[in-house]
Image (cartoon, rainbow, N blue to C red; front, top):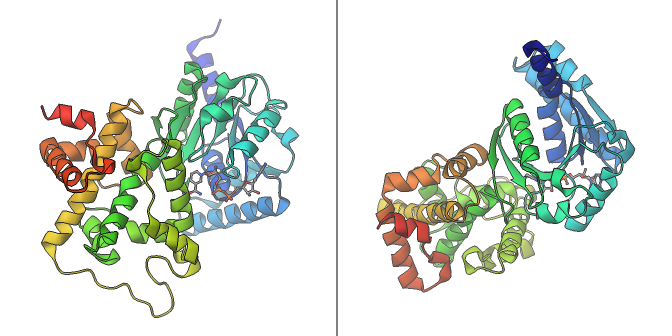
Length: 394
Ligand code: NAI
């Protein structure tokens, strides 16, 4: 017989002293380790390379020092967080974990191999998750003997700061596992959304036109990078598409665009651009190489945007309507709920408003009219209006 207190104690024990192992101690793995240790879990960070573990350890130590200096944490709490994180190169060290989160290189064959290996050392009820940005969770699950306990738990970079976590059940995942993970993610102070296992999940699918349409407008000679960036900042976005691509890295952004395009069987709507390909060929990857769409050399300045309010408004609306169309189509295809799509874009990539709500605010009819105008002008599939968006205006 368990009374209410037993129930609460068991519940607290489950939440507080879970052992969670993370595979891959790079940018994402170490950020996720911090989130989980801050929530009280016993965290094991693993990597095949000892130097990666050493780097993660010193990175976490300096993050904690900064948080103490900024008075966000006391020294005592920071020390306790660091003590909860251990480091190991051996897969066998993961035994006894309630949850595994994989954050290794973005390669399907390597991920499948690692999942199959890990399954041999963990308990039957351990949940196995991947932090992949673009690979099929269903395909990863297929490498496991118990695929019903495999799912995607997709954090955003930097994991300690971005609230969003996309939870992606594979075709094989059980409802109980998905529900359980949803509760855990909430208990870590994050905002979970549930998303079908489809290319780009929510954020990396819905955000594609932010970059693609901006580049297209540039290619057509309507405006330069800084005018297009300013048009989006005028709408409330923290950064314009070109400055953001330069920050993310043009290699990373182009790889996501190419992978989403291929995964959608080359739907023209997701077509990558030659401009971005050329930048990659030149090695102009953005801030990290000192040059991308803009130059980051000493003394370099960003050219001022054109002083043309109607041009900027037209550019902003064209990109925004493409984003709204993608958000409605994602809802139309039952990839996620309308609420989750709006949460994803505001909590994962800091959009000033949810796109479903923004469409309603602008008036869905005006969105459809602008898409139709673009479609008639160009005759290209990328401008096709989502059937849902059109139906909602009838
Ligand atoms: P990273 O390159 O910084 O770190 C990957 C780490 O995994 C490296 O330390 C490497 O030594 C280790 N590793 C590689 N193969 C391994 C294996 N077989 N076993 C154990 N460790 C192994 O990569 P990052 O950026 O942290 O990305 C990791 C994953 O998270 C990828 O799937 C990526 O798509 C995803 N992701 C990345 C985001 C980002 O903005 N960087 C955002 C959200 C997801």
